[in-house]
Image 1 (cartoon, rainbow, N blue to C red):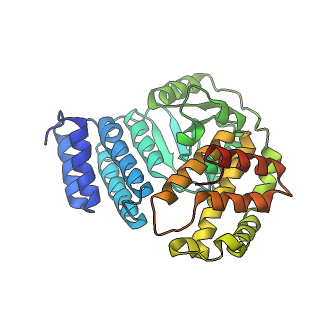
Image 2: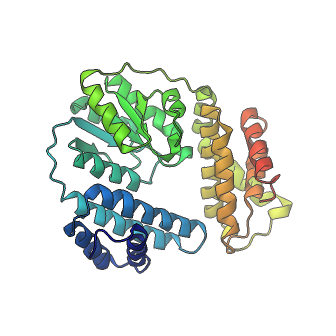
Amino acid sequence: MNAQSDPDTRIGRFTDYLESSDLRGALAYAVGLLDDGLAVDELVLDLLAPAQALVGLRWELGDWSVADEHAATAITEAVLAVAGARTVAIADRGRLVLVCPEAERHSLPARMITELLRAEGFSIVFLGAASSKETLASFLSQFEADALIVSCSIAMNLPSAVGMLAAAKHAAVPSLCGGRAFGASASADRATMLGASGWAPDLPTAVGLFDRWRSDRPASNPILAPGAKVCGALELAHRSVVQRCVAAHTARADVGVQIGLGGSESWLRDEFDAIVSSVAATILLDDASILIEFAHWLSQRLRHDPRIGTKAGSLLQTVTGVLADEYHAASAYLQVAMYVEGGGAA
Protein backbone atom coordinates (compact mmCIF):
# COMPACT_ATOMS: atom_id res chain seq x y z
CA MET A 1 0.00 0.00 0.00
CA ASN A 2 1.11 3.57 -0.56
CA ALA A 3 -0.61 6.28 1.45
CA GLN A 4 1.06 8.87 -0.80
CA SER A 5 -0.46 7.49 -4.03
CA ASP A 6 -2.71 9.61 -6.19
CA PRO A 7 -6.09 10.20 -4.47
CA ASP A 8 -8.03 9.36 -7.63
CA THR A 9 -6.18 6.07 -7.87
CA ARG A 10 -7.06 5.24 -4.29
CA ILE A 11 -10.71 6.13 -4.86
CA GLY A 12 -10.85 4.01 -7.99
CA ARG A 13 -9.35 1.00 -6.29
CA PHE A 14 -11.61 1.29 -3.25
CA THR A 15 -14.66 1.70 -5.49
CA ASP A 16 -13.69 -1.52 -7.25
CA TYR A 17 -13.96 -3.32 -3.92
CA LEU A 18 -17.37 -1.75 -3.36
CA GLU A 19 -18.55 -2.73 -6.83
CA SER A 20 -17.61 -6.37 -6.24
CA SER A 21 -19.04 -6.33 -2.68
CA ASP A 22 -15.61 -7.35 -1.41
CA LEU A 23 -15.65 -6.47 2.29
CA ARG A 24 -12.40 -8.25 3.09
CA GLY A 25 -10.59 -6.57 0.25
CA ALA A 26 -11.92 -3.12 1.17
CA LEU A 27 -10.93 -3.56 4.82
CA ALA A 28 -7.47 -4.83 3.96
CA TYR A 29 -6.90 -1.95 1.55
CA ALA A 30 -8.05 0.72 4.01
CA VAL A 31 -6.07 -0.75 6.92
CA GLY A 32 -3.01 -0.90 4.69
CA LEU A 33 -3.33 2.79 3.89
CA LEU A 34 -3.63 3.63 7.58
CA ASP A 35 -0.60 1.46 8.38
CA ASP A 36 1.33 3.35 5.72
CA GLY A 37 0.63 6.65 7.43
CA LEU A 38 -2.67 7.90 6.02
CA ALA A 39 -4.48 9.78 8.79
CA VAL A 40 -8.03 8.82 9.77
CA ASP A 41 -9.40 12.19 8.68
CA GLU A 42 -7.69 11.82 5.30
CA LEU A 43 -9.16 8.33 4.89
CA VAL A 44 -12.64 9.64 5.62
CA LEU A 45 -12.53 12.90 3.65
CA ASP A 46 -10.33 11.88 0.72
CA LEU A 47 -11.35 8.25 0.21
CA LEU A 48 -14.57 7.10 1.87
CA ALA A 49 -16.64 10.24 1.22
CA PRO A 50 -15.80 10.62 -2.50
CA ALA A 51 -16.12 6.89 -3.09
CA GLN A 52 -19.57 6.92 -1.51
CA ALA A 53 -20.53 9.89 -3.67
CA LEU A 54 -19.69 7.76 -6.71
CA VAL A 55 -21.87 4.99 -5.33
CA GLY A 56 -24.82 7.39 -5.12
CA LEU A 57 -24.18 8.69 -8.62
CA ARG A 58 -24.11 5.19 -10.09
CA TRP A 59 -27.45 4.44 -8.43
CA GLU A 60 -28.97 7.67 -9.75
CA LEU A 61 -27.80 6.84 -13.28
CA GLY A 62 -29.33 3.38 -13.02
CA ASP A 63 -25.96 1.63 -13.26
CA TRP A 64 -26.35 0.15 -9.77
CA SER A 65 -29.43 -1.29 -8.11
CA VAL A 66 -30.66 -0.33 -4.66
CA ALA A 67 -29.17 -3.60 -3.41
CA ASP A 68 -25.79 -2.69 -4.92
CA GLU A 69 -25.90 0.71 -3.21
CA HIS A 70 -26.87 -0.76 0.14
CA ALA A 71 -24.12 -3.38 -0.03
CA ALA A 72 -21.52 -0.73 -0.85
CA THR A 73 -22.70 1.51 1.96
CA ALA A 74 -22.48 -1.38 4.44
CA ILE A 75 -18.86 -1.97 3.42
CA THR A 76 -18.02 1.72 3.80
CA GLU A 77 -19.60 1.73 7.26
CA ALA A 78 -17.51 -1.31 8.25
CA VAL A 79 -14.32 0.39 7.06
CA LEU A 80 -15.29 3.55 8.92
CA ALA A 81 -15.78 1.58 12.13
CA VAL A 82 -12.35 -0.02 11.83
CA ALA A 83 -10.75 3.36 11.13
CA GLY A 84 -12.55 4.90 14.10
CA ALA A 85 -11.23 2.20 16.40
CA ARG A 86 -7.71 3.45 15.68
CA THR A 87 -8.46 6.95 16.99
CA VAL A 88 -6.29 7.66 20.03
CA ALA A 89 -7.16 11.31 20.73
CA ILE A 90 -7.97 12.14 24.36
CA ALA A 91 -11.64 13.15 24.63
CA ASP A 92 -11.18 16.41 26.54
CA ARG A 93 -12.70 19.05 24.22
CA GLY A 94 -16.36 18.60 25.16
CA ARG A 95 -19.33 16.25 25.10
CA LEU A 96 -21.41 16.21 21.92
CA VAL A 97 -24.58 14.46 20.81
CA LEU A 98 -25.17 13.90 17.10
CA VAL A 99 -28.55 13.02 15.63
CA CYS A 100 -30.26 12.71 12.26
CA PRO A 101 -33.82 14.07 11.89
CA GLU A 102 -36.66 11.60 12.20
CA ALA A 103 -37.14 11.29 8.43
CA GLU A 104 -33.40 11.14 7.63
CA ARG A 105 -32.24 7.59 6.91
CA HIS A 106 -28.91 8.50 5.32
CA SER A 107 -26.71 8.13 8.38
CA LEU A 108 -23.31 7.54 6.75
CA PRO A 109 -22.37 11.25 6.55
CA ALA A 110 -23.23 11.59 10.24
CA ARG A 111 -21.13 8.54 11.08
CA MET A 112 -18.21 10.11 9.24
CA ILE A 113 -18.60 13.34 11.21
CA THR A 114 -18.73 11.30 14.41
CA GLU A 115 -15.34 9.74 13.74
CA LEU A 116 -13.81 13.01 12.55
CA LEU A 117 -14.88 14.85 15.70
CA ARG A 118 -13.72 11.98 17.89
CA ALA A 119 -10.31 12.26 16.23
CA GLU A 120 -10.35 15.97 17.14
CA GLY A 121 -10.68 15.09 20.83
CA PHE A 122 -14.43 15.31 21.41
CA SER A 123 -16.51 12.78 23.28
CA ILE A 124 -19.46 12.18 20.99
CA VAL A 125 -22.60 10.04 21.11
CA PHE A 126 -24.35 9.30 17.81
CA LEU A 127 -28.02 8.41 18.26
CA GLY A 128 -28.36 6.97 14.78
CA ALA A 129 -30.57 7.61 11.78
CA ALA A 130 -34.25 8.49 11.95
CA SER A 131 -34.25 9.26 15.67
CA SER A 132 -37.46 10.65 17.13
CA LYS A 133 -37.62 14.02 18.85
CA GLU A 134 -39.01 12.26 21.93
CA THR A 135 -36.00 9.94 22.08
CA LEU A 136 -33.65 12.89 21.74
CA ALA A 137 -35.45 14.93 24.40
CA SER A 138 -35.24 12.03 26.84
CA PHE A 139 -31.55 11.52 26.15
CA LEU A 140 -30.66 15.19 26.54
CA SER A 141 -32.44 15.28 29.89
CA GLN A 142 -30.05 12.61 31.19
CA PHE A 143 -26.82 13.38 29.31
CA GLU A 144 -24.83 16.51 30.05
CA ALA A 145 -24.06 17.68 26.53
CA ASP A 146 -22.09 20.74 25.52
CA ALA A 147 -23.81 20.83 22.12
CA LEU A 148 -26.20 18.99 19.82
CA ILE A 149 -25.38 18.38 16.16
CA VAL A 150 -28.22 17.86 13.70
CA SER A 151 -26.99 16.23 10.50
CA CYS A 152 -29.29 16.27 7.47
CA SER A 153 -28.32 15.31 3.93
CA ILE A 154 -31.62 15.60 2.08
CA ALA A 155 -33.58 18.86 2.10
CA MET A 156 -36.98 17.13 2.11
CA ASN A 157 -36.18 15.98 5.67
CA LEU A 158 -35.66 19.50 7.06
CA PRO A 159 -39.17 19.75 8.59
CA SER A 160 -38.35 16.91 10.97
CA ALA A 161 -35.22 18.78 12.08
CA VAL A 162 -37.41 21.40 13.73
CA GLY A 163 -38.40 19.02 16.53
CA MET A 164 -34.76 18.10 17.14
CA LEU A 165 -33.74 21.73 17.50
CA ALA A 166 -36.71 22.41 19.78
CA ALA A 167 -35.60 19.53 22.03
CA ALA A 168 -32.13 21.06 22.31
CA LYS A 169 -33.61 24.46 23.13
CA HIS A 170 -35.79 22.92 25.86
CA ALA A 171 -32.71 21.24 27.37
CA ALA A 172 -30.72 24.51 27.14
CA VAL A 173 -28.18 22.82 24.85
CA PRO A 174 -26.66 24.80 21.92
CA SER A 175 -27.41 23.27 18.55
CA LEU A 176 -25.35 23.14 15.38
CA CYS A 177 -26.67 22.12 11.96
CA GLY A 178 -24.61 20.56 9.21
CA GLY A 179 -25.04 18.54 6.05
CA ARG A 180 -25.95 19.15 2.44
CA ALA A 181 -29.62 19.85 3.25
CA PHE A 182 -28.71 23.04 5.10
CA GLY A 183 -26.85 24.43 2.11
CA ALA A 184 -23.22 24.67 1.12
CA SER A 185 -22.80 28.43 0.80
CA ALA A 186 -21.54 30.87 3.40
CA SER A 187 -25.12 31.46 4.49
CA ALA A 188 -26.60 29.90 7.61
CA ASP A 189 -30.14 31.00 6.76
CA ARG A 190 -31.80 27.58 6.73
CA ALA A 191 -30.29 26.54 10.06
CA THR A 192 -31.05 29.80 11.85
CA MET A 193 -34.59 29.94 10.48
CA LEU A 194 -35.23 26.52 12.00
CA GLY A 195 -33.97 27.69 15.41
CA ALA A 196 -30.37 26.41 15.45
CA SER A 197 -27.63 28.16 17.42
CA GLY A 198 -25.23 27.83 14.50
CA TRP A 199 -24.32 26.20 11.20
CA ALA A 200 -21.05 24.77 9.92
CA PRO A 201 -20.14 23.93 6.32
CA ASP A 202 -17.05 21.99 7.32
CA LEU A 203 -15.17 20.35 10.17
CA PRO A 204 -12.84 23.26 11.09
CA THR A 205 -15.79 25.64 11.42
CA ALA A 206 -17.66 23.18 13.63
CA VAL A 207 -14.65 22.59 15.87
CA GLY A 208 -14.10 26.32 16.25
CA LEU A 209 -17.71 26.87 17.28
CA PHE A 210 -17.69 24.03 19.81
CA ASP A 211 -14.51 25.34 21.41
CA ARG A 212 -16.00 28.83 21.68
CA TRP A 213 -19.32 27.59 23.04
CA ARG A 214 -17.67 25.86 25.99
CA SER A 215 -16.90 29.26 27.52
CA ASP A 216 -19.52 31.39 25.79
CA ARG A 217 -22.78 29.51 25.26
CA PRO A 218 -24.94 31.10 22.55
CA ALA A 219 -28.49 32.19 23.26
CA SER A 220 -31.22 29.99 21.82
CA ASN A 221 -32.84 31.20 18.62
CA PRO A 222 -36.58 31.34 17.84
CA ILE A 223 -38.02 29.47 14.88
CA LEU A 224 -38.20 32.02 12.08
CA ALA A 225 -39.26 29.74 9.23
CA PRO A 226 -42.03 31.66 7.42
CA GLY A 227 -44.07 28.61 6.44
CA ALA A 228 -43.96 26.68 9.70
CA LYS A 229 -47.75 26.67 10.22
CA VAL A 230 -48.69 25.56 6.70
CA CYS A 231 -45.86 23.02 6.64
CA GLY A 232 -47.09 21.58 9.92
CA ALA A 233 -50.60 21.16 8.52
CA LEU A 234 -49.26 19.44 5.41
CA GLU A 235 -47.08 17.15 7.52
CA LEU A 236 -50.13 16.09 9.56
CA ALA A 237 -52.04 15.32 6.37
CA HIS A 238 -49.01 13.73 4.69
CA ARG A 239 -50.19 10.12 4.59
CA SER A 240 -53.65 11.07 3.35
CA VAL A 241 -52.21 13.34 0.67
CA VAL A 242 -49.91 10.59 -0.60
CA GLN A 243 -52.81 8.14 -0.80
CA ARG A 244 -54.86 10.67 -2.73
CA CYS A 245 -51.94 11.22 -5.12
CA VAL A 246 -51.64 7.49 -5.81
CA ALA A 247 -55.38 7.20 -6.49
CA ALA A 248 -55.46 10.31 -8.69
CA HIS A 249 -52.40 9.28 -10.67
CA THR A 250 -53.58 5.77 -11.46
CA ALA A 251 -56.98 7.15 -12.50
CA ARG A 252 -55.57 9.64 -14.99
CA ALA A 253 -56.35 8.64 -18.57
CA ASP A 254 -52.88 9.49 -19.85
CA VAL A 255 -51.14 7.30 -17.28
CA GLY A 256 -53.80 4.65 -16.84
CA VAL A 257 -51.59 2.03 -18.47
CA GLN A 258 -48.18 1.97 -16.81
CA ILE A 259 -45.24 -0.28 -17.50
CA GLY A 260 -42.48 -1.65 -15.32
CA LEU A 261 -41.90 -0.24 -11.84
CA GLY A 262 -43.93 2.86 -12.68
CA GLY A 263 -47.13 0.84 -12.58
CA SER A 264 -46.54 -0.41 -9.04
CA GLU A 265 -48.66 1.17 -6.32
CA SER A 266 -45.85 0.77 -3.77
CA TRP A 267 -43.42 2.50 -6.15
CA LEU A 268 -45.86 5.36 -6.70
CA ARG A 269 -46.40 5.69 -2.95
CA ASP A 270 -42.66 6.05 -2.36
CA GLU A 271 -42.28 8.64 -5.10
CA PHE A 272 -45.25 10.72 -3.94
CA ASP A 273 -44.01 10.49 -0.36
CA ALA A 274 -40.74 12.11 -1.45
CA ILE A 275 -42.46 14.77 -3.56
CA VAL A 276 -44.87 15.79 -0.79
CA SER A 277 -41.99 15.91 1.70
CA SER A 278 -40.06 18.19 -0.65
CA VAL A 279 -43.09 20.44 -1.02
CA ALA A 280 -43.40 20.67 2.77
CA ALA A 281 -39.74 21.64 3.15
CA THR A 282 -40.11 24.24 0.40
CA ILE A 283 -43.13 25.77 2.13
CA LEU A 284 -41.41 25.69 5.51
CA LEU A 285 -38.49 27.81 4.38
CA ASP A 286 -40.21 29.65 1.51
CA ASP A 287 -37.35 28.41 -0.65
CA ALA A 288 -38.34 27.30 -4.15
CA SER A 289 -34.82 26.01 -4.83
CA ILE A 290 -35.54 22.98 -2.62
CA LEU A 291 -38.34 21.74 -4.87
CA ILE A 292 -36.59 22.81 -8.06
CA GLU A 293 -33.48 20.83 -7.16
CA PHE A 294 -35.57 17.83 -6.13
CA ALA A 295 -37.57 17.93 -9.37
CA HIS A 296 -34.35 17.99 -11.40
CA TRP A 297 -32.91 15.08 -9.42
CA LEU A 298 -36.13 13.08 -9.83
CA SER A 299 -36.27 13.80 -13.54
CA GLN A 300 -32.68 12.68 -14.07
CA ARG A 301 -33.15 9.51 -12.04
CA LEU A 302 -36.32 8.43 -13.85
CA ARG A 303 -34.83 9.29 -17.22
CA HIS A 304 -31.92 6.94 -16.63
CA ASP A 305 -34.07 3.98 -15.53
CA PRO A 306 -35.98 2.55 -18.54
CA ARG A 307 -37.76 0.02 -16.31
CA ILE A 308 -39.96 2.68 -14.75
CA GLY A 309 -41.92 4.11 -17.66
CA THR A 310 -43.06 7.19 -15.72
CA LYS A 311 -41.88 10.78 -16.15
CA ALA A 312 -41.21 13.18 -13.30
CA GLY A 313 -43.45 15.84 -14.81
CA SER A 314 -46.41 13.46 -14.74
CA LEU A 315 -45.91 12.80 -11.01
CA LEU A 316 -45.50 16.50 -10.22
CA GLN A 317 -48.67 17.35 -12.14
CA THR A 318 -50.62 14.83 -10.10
CA VAL A 319 -49.43 16.32 -6.82
CA THR A 320 -50.25 19.81 -8.08
CA GLY A 321 -53.81 18.74 -8.77
CA VAL A 322 -54.25 17.11 -5.36
CA LEU A 323 -52.86 20.09 -3.43
CA ALA A 324 -54.29 22.91 -5.54
CA ASP A 325 -57.45 23.57 -3.51
CA GLU A 326 -56.07 23.30 0.04
CA TYR A 327 -52.44 24.40 -0.36
CA HIS A 328 -52.18 27.25 -2.83
CA ALA A 329 -48.52 27.91 -2.04
CA ALA A 330 -47.68 24.27 -2.78
CA SER A 331 -49.37 24.47 -6.16
CA ALA A 332 -47.43 27.62 -7.02
CA TYR A 333 -44.09 26.09 -6.04
CA LEU A 334 -44.85 22.95 -8.06
CA GLN A 335 -45.71 25.02 -11.11
CA VAL A 336 -42.38 26.85 -10.81
CA ALA A 337 -40.48 23.58 -10.44
CA MET A 338 -42.15 22.08 -13.51
CA TYR A 339 -41.50 25.23 -15.53
CA VAL A 340 -37.82 25.26 -14.61
CA GLU A 341 -37.51 21.55 -15.35
CA GLY A 342 -39.15 22.00 -18.73
CA GLY A 343 -42.83 22.69 -18.27
CA GLY A 344 -43.43 19.21 -16.88
CA ALA A 345 -41.95 17.52 -19.93
CA ALA A 346 -39.43 15.59 -17.83
